[in-house]
Length: 382
Ligand code: GLY
Image (cartoon, rainbow, N blue to C red):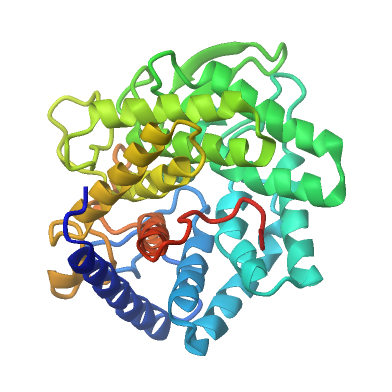
């Protein structure tokens, strides 16, 4: 529970001001550059990317700052960075078009309900849905046709949106079916989630669990679990199917039960003696996901608990251990994030999606403190 709302509100405003300064420096120093994770606190470096799923998170932060400040400086750059990724709307080689376009073009549509913006979102959603495999009934990950990731749950909202806007029932069914497949094979009975599922591409049958960024195939990678909380919540927002809300809440319960009171998890709860104690980007995603869940849960007591839990996470992330405002020469916003531990990419660094979801959650918290709903609407302009 936040005891002093005035002081907390000031800290949120200060953090958003700090974020504005960091982002202004980034887009001024490195125009048209899409960073993914820092190296030693610096955004520009030659480190490996593994996959290109992050190009929406910089534009997304620019949209959030425009929403917060109404300053046209941010608007111009938010539009520019959104346009820079438009060509990705036909990229069917990755499973990540929701990450790219929901953070940018959907926010643009919220501000400006023009048909050309809607058309880009619909095309990106159709491209994402075109990856659906009848054998196995899922949207495969970028890794291979046999692989499904928990992360893909964050990319089904744009498919539901495209299906709804174009009246395409078959596309809608693909998105809903992928969610049910993920629920059946990746989410376990205790609410934990496997990172990856491997299927037999000939028969479509499920073979085994696996992981890339977690500790073990049978453990729960923290960021993957937060993708599940948020993604199943979004699936429920679109469909009203209570199975998706139940899954989001089961994953939320696992997160709370297994995370220390401050609300920031390690990279994987099962890893013995992890080299880094925290994965702050998972906490930032969780804060946003819990705010969303607090507006979805039918149980008022649980809804209030989710909201308080989100505030608790943010209260922790606003401390200097995580907020980089007192760390000299650090270019990111949130310290202590992790991209890919086993590949040694972005370990104990700032990561673009961590900063994005942190800002989203801060904005949601501010809305609540001002007596308005927290969540981003499932449908643009709603
Ligand atoms: N979607 C990739 C990640 O969470 O690292």
